[in-house]
Amino acid sequence: MAPDDAEEYDDDELNEEESDGPEIGVRIGILGLSLYTHHGVSAAEREVGQRLVLDVHFDVGEPDALVTDRVEDTVDYGEVCQVIALIAQQRSYKTLERLCAVIADRLASQFNADSVTVKASKPEPPIPLPVEEVSVEVWREEHP
Image (tube, rainbow, N blue to C red; front, side, top):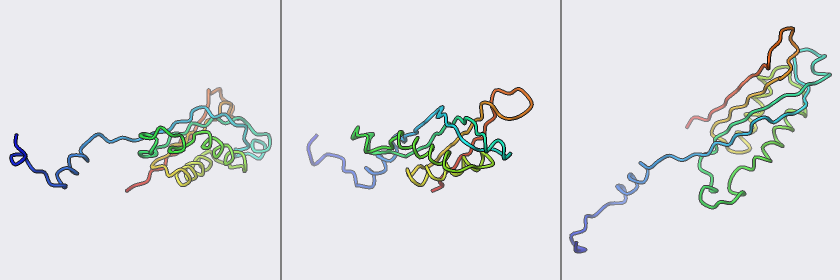
């Protein structure tokens, strides 16, 4: 095909074709972060404390690390664990709902997450019936 016969494309057509490609995103998960904390409804529960297990998932869009393969171009999950531990251990909350909401808000703002899910589980809850665990899950999602 001669150069004069080549089909011409305008930039808008090329951009439309590129945007029809697959959507890529990154979800980071931290499962089983076990911390000794002082959360609970009763004063005794807050005073004595207990182990909480936290599971966190959050979406961070398309970090540059997808292309660069550099840790500094994505979210450092070690740093995320430190932030979660600080929040969970620096003060006492009566409800797991509030604790999870505070963690979700901090992760969303500090790590620019599009959505965050935080689950806090008490493996040995102070209730009179035998249960494996109790848990609360809170999610936060940014809407465009």
